[in-house]
Image (cartoon, helix red, strand yellow):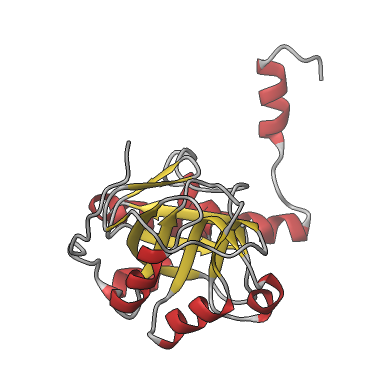
Length: 223
């Protein structure tokens, strides 16, 4: 679909308390709670040294290699927003570097996700400001447009809508629709409780592994 020249308003943001709860979760538990179908995993890497990223998606769609609309997003996003940029996953030219990420951090942006390349990777790697990207390139960006703000975008194979709750950590990124956020959060909390119990049993040597034998026999293995 052609990229237009639209700057749309951000829809209603999720409750800050809800975002804070998601920030305590890990992406595997959230992903499992979404059928293991939604999320940008191997195609997106954490390029920073810090804590979990969580916040509403402020989406940007740009021409690959062009960051004009990303500059406007940095200047207009609200504190706590996550700027999510669909640059087509093409990594020939970097979309952001140290200066732009520093400007975003100074404005209170929660983090940046680039479906494309970054540069100044060594400096960003030492920073605690959350940046995710699909690659690195020393080549600088263009500033010609076109581009769009607060439209549906795609990051890897993950659709992101403006206002989705973004959670990112060392395992990747997930985008949680606000309409299902509470049930997904409740499920992730339940998984956390279950896995915490399992880990205690594993360390104590008391974990029950009968399900493995049953699974193999059900598949016809002689065990």
